[in-house]
Each structure stands twice: as C-alpha cells, then as structure tokens.
Length: 173
Image (cartoon, rainbow, N blue to C red; front, top):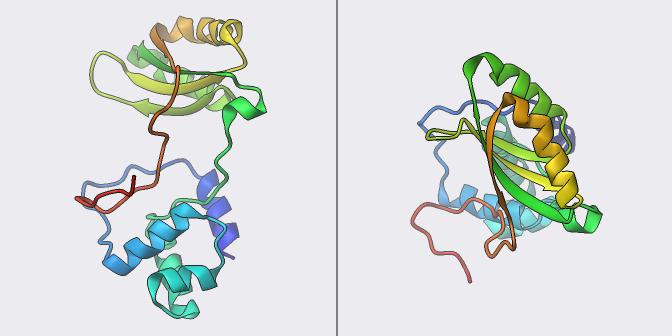
C-alpha cells in the first residue's frame, strides 16, 4: 500500500508548499533519516531506528506521506552508468508568453532531470544530462528558441544531492 501511495505521489506534479512547514518531531526525524538512507528498508528496521513498534512506525510513515513530507521513494540512478556521460546546469531566461510551452518541452525531455523556477537573471535553472557534448549541444539548440541560455558543464560533484536533515544539526562526514 505504501509503495502504491509513493508511486502515485511521484506521478503527481510537485505542489507549492506554504512557508509554514509541517512540524517534525525528533522521532519523525529518525524515521526520515533512516528512510532517506535506505528507501527499501523494511518496517522492522525503520521501527528499530525510531524506537517505535512496527504498527506505530507504519502509522507515522503514513501520516508523513499524507502530509506531503515524504513525497515518494525511488532509486538513485547514476546517469553516467546508463549512458549519460555529461551533466550540465543550464540557466535560461524565458519571456512570459513562452513559459508554458518551454515547461511542456522540458517535461517531455529525458535530458531534463529537474527544473527550478528561480529569481534573478534566469527564469529557470535546470539539471540536464546528455550522452556527450554534441548531444548536449543538440539539446541546447532545441531550447534556444525559448530564450537565452547559460550553461555550466559539471566536472565532478563533491557533494551529491542528499537527504534533508534537521535544521542546525551536524551531518556525519
């Protein structure tokens, strides 16, 4: 049931979240930390991490999912190992009449891993993958009609995307 909810949540477009966050107590943080470390952990392991019973842990997890705190659980796939050898951060300035068409294009493009609507000189910042530099150039040409782009090719990622931790807490090295 939890996997079905997670799959359904992953299929929904992200919601705009109000500035007021859902309160998360220390037990919920232990559950979130364990879940982010291993999304396939059985309820028994999650219960051990939280110090709760299995039914209480399942209920906590359900409440976190229902509140939108846990948006989904999925695999972390290395793009290079599946043929995408180039990662780039692409900024683009898109004027208002073209924003919907641009976002529709990005949603259909396998190269776009994420797209953020941002303040500043760019309208959007995207993380993009490509097989090689000519493939990246082809993708950029396909979006240049929407606006001016600025591209930074990623050489390495010393701090990869990671899970959310409690505010003010120290991370393990």
